[in-house]
Each structure stands twice: as structure tokens, then as C-alpha cells.
Length: 281
Length: 278
Image 1 (cartoon, rainbow over the protein chains, first blue to last red):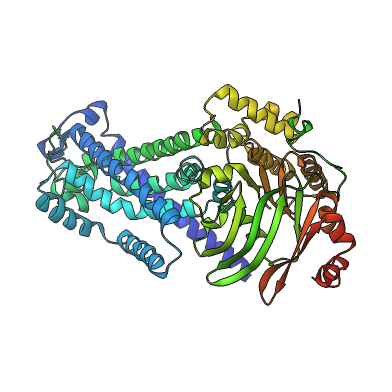
Image 2 (image 1 turned 90 degrees about the vertical axis):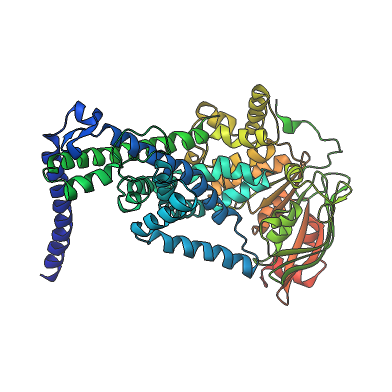
């Protein structure tokens, strides 16, 4: 009897979560699809976003993401490799340095995004003089994404079989080759997972961008222009613009689609880039 | 044409197991070697000669420093920063512990096979191709030729020639270990270090690998750690017996395999071989 009840409870919790998720998704799809058209994707917004489309906003979003990923991928992989392969383990001092970095990253991963927004505004926009621009927004997002990305990649690298490290060393291979040809490709599933987490977080971000990349909805001319991200646009339409709900739903639909597409791309990219090394000769 | 059938640059003696294979010429000379991890000495005062073209077996109970000894010979102990090595190891007139040694080319000349087969998670071809490229064998045709020769040497060529681009992890345990031996051989080393190469294999694969090791005799200098006394007796020309004394590994006896097994001079050796100790 108790066993039955328990199974029922487990099924109920799983069902509840799935139903809620599909409710949200269904709501967005049903209300968003009716407002969707090609011109919505390409046109500039009119009348504070009630009319027109989201063309410039899509471009700004992609540019912000490009900056964020362009900075965080190489930097993050570098730090992850350092943490898992180079951080000194022989001395007490060296070990505590590595531990301090891990602790910092874990703390930073939990910091609310509005704090990153304030930091980005103070540091990139004002101190470095980048102003409200796509560049300072992208850099702020990079700071926000890095902790998760680094820790995920590091976990993937640390999980790589130690026998391969010793095998590579015993063959007279340099550490660089071992990392490049064996360790990174073996860790590629973790790298893809880190990338997906990072992309998801960055694409859906609002708070960190309002104070850094701003909310100008014109087509950006360069990275130094202000640009409105899709999530900021949705926030603005639903909170500040009466009658903006249909456009907000359509934008939300596009945002979800974008995240799915980008995750699929990240997956294929890591697969191709790293698996190619595994099988190609 | 099997490379192993050609005689080496030295005279091959009686290949029958237990007999010295050649006029003993030291290939590696170890003097007063000690190894410590985190200030804890695990091996002390080891001096012995490893003879060229012969198979030397290291026997003794677990934890008496045999693997540590093996890892000093190709400086794999460098991977463990807390390891401290004392003494001298002369190879080719150079003290590989103290002189400015090019570690990468040292490891090319002294290959190593591990207890657990560790092929890289790459294709079969790439497992052998990668080390060759790493050591600057630039020409694809030349690399392919060397790869085929190495795979033939370990008797794996006919089994894998049609699936060179499949993952090496799809091979059986015994095939993986032979692939690892081929991966070491493809760099044309002079010395092979083997750390219990058969202990993780099933009996049939183990026999295949053991026969392969016997065929390496004369062509390469082989140092093999084994817990299997019968195997040591079957494959080795020389044997070294290690034992723990006061928590520190020591070399107790070294000599021709047959002499050591049939007429050990040290009572510890006799006790270990007869099974009353260890």
C-alpha cells in the first residue's frame, strides 16, 4: 500500500513538472504564433514595439552573444585546462591557490545577474568608457557565463582517464599534444554541456544587459552602439507598453527557438571540431 | 617480412627461456637508486645492470617498489611532483637522472606498456599515427608503412587491417594490449618497460601477449614486472627479486633467471619462490 502511494507520488511530481513546462511552452506558442510572420522577423519595431518587428533586436542579440561567447570560450577553456592540468598540487600553497580559484568561481556562479549588470555598468560602461554598447553588454555576459562554463569543462577534463595522460607521456608526447589531441576531445561532451548552459543563460539574460548594452531598438551600426537584446525587449513590451503583449509573446517564441537552435549548433560544433580529431587521420 | 626475424646487432644466444640470450652487455646501469614520495622512501639502494637484448623480470610482492623502479627508467616519475629520486641511472653514457636529458627523446627510446591496456580513445590508425607525428615522422606514406610493420610485429595486422578507422576501444582487452605494444614499437625504441602487461587480461590473451614478449627477445631490451612467477620463468633471461625491509623496497637478489629460480642464494628469495613468504 505504502509502496503504491509512493509510486503515485513520484509519478505525480514528475507529471506536475512536465505539465507546468508544457503549459508555459504552449501558452507562448499559441499566443506567439498568431503574431508571427517573416516581416516580424525582419522589420524594425514601430510604435514602441506594438507594431513592426524585431529585426534590429535579433541582430543586437546575436552580436551580444557573439561577443560573450567569443570571449568566454577561449578564456574558459584556458582556465579549465589550467585548473585540471597545470594547477600545482605538490605544494600546500599551490593547492590552496587552485582551491581559492574554484571557490571564487562557484561563488560567482551563484551571484544574481543584476549584480553582474551593476558591475558591468561600473567597469565596462563607465570605467573603461565603453558606454551603453553591445561590447560592454557582451563582456558583462562573458563574466556571467565564465564561472559555469569553466567548472563544467574542468569537471569534464578531470574525469578523463589518467591512464591516457601517462600513456601519452610515456610515448614522449608533449603535454600540449596530449591536451590538444586526447584530453580536450575526450572531454568534448562536457564542453558541449558547458556551452549549452552558457548560451542558455546568456540568451535569456535581461538584468545584466539593461545597464550595459541598453535598450535602444535601432539597428546597431557597430559593436560600440547600444543594442536591445531580445529578453530586454520582451521585458519592456510586457511591463512598460500597454498593448504590447502579442508582440511580447511572438518575441518569446523566437527567443525559445533561438536557444534551441543555438544549443543544437553548439552540440554539432563540438562534435565536429573534436570528434574529427578522434577519427580523422 | 617480419622485423623480429632479423638478428640484432649483438649475438643471439640460446633463445630457450631461462638462458642468457647473449654476451651480457649492460644497456642500462643503475647505481644506488632510491625513490621517495612525500619524504617517504619506497625504494632504496638499488644497483643492477640491465643487459642489452635480454628480458629481465622484476619479481616480488606488491608494494615493494617494482613499478616505481620501472617508472624512474623513463622518468615517468616526473609526472608525480612529490617523487624524489636519488642515485644514478646510466643509459648510453648519460646519467638520465641528473644530466640535461631530453625527456621526450628519452621516452621515445624507452617505451612503456602499462598494466591496464590504455589505447587512446581514437581510431586504431590514429593511436599509432599520433606518436609518429609527434616525433616528426612527417611523410604519410612512411608513417603508414611503419604502422603496418608495428601491427604485424604484434600479430594484430590481419585482425585490424580492415577496420583501421574504427575506435581502438572497440578491440578486445588482449587486442588493446597488443595495440599498446605496437604503439610503443612504432617509435622504434631500444628498451621496453612492461608493468604487469598480462595481469589485466584473460588467460588466452595473456598467452598471446606472453608469446609476443618472447619474440621481442634479442631485438629489444625488455624489463618486465610480473607477479606471475611461472611467467617470469618462461620469458625472462634475468630476474631481479625485490622485497620490503622495514617499509622500504630493496633489491635482494639479481641473476640469471634459471640460477635465481633453481638455486637462490638469499634465504628470502628461496622463501618467496617456495611460497612460504610473500
